[in-house]
Length: 57
Image 1 (tube, rainbow, N blue to C red):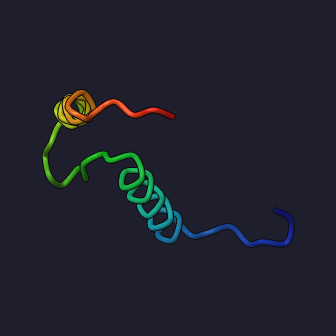
Image 2: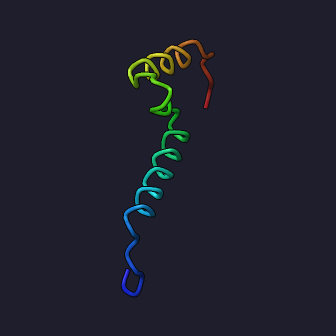
């Protein structure tokens, strides 16, 4: 946006990390610090979905 000063590299890194955490929380991805592979998280999520009872919309 015009008139908005650019972020310094530390602020930009902080904003990117926050956005990644929010995306991960929203989408159910594990935090990288946990060491859980995304494939493992995906398979667990799919197994939970398969165990749910069918619902009528």
